[in-house]
Image (tube, rainbow, N blue to C red; front, side, top):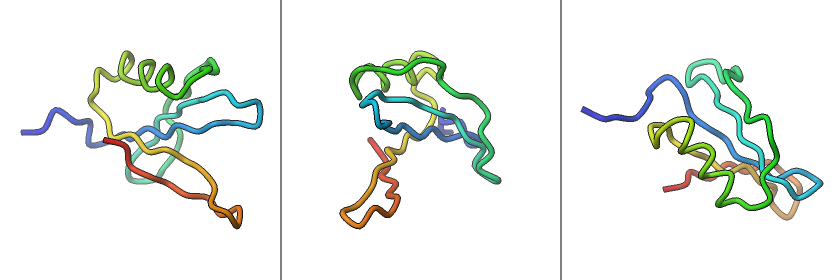
Length: 77
């Protein structure tokens, strides 16, 4: 049996101010269920915040943009 939360996943994203944010979304409908209230200076700090809240029990995806500006979503290990 997996210890992963099968109802939520987390997206992390860097904003225009170069701060990292996270948001937890419902797997089925992708509605936001929780949003990290602070901006993190580094990706590692953001991931540490996610792991503190969810105890490593969610899948994490990094949101970015490709060279054409299209949204990308990459699963992190």
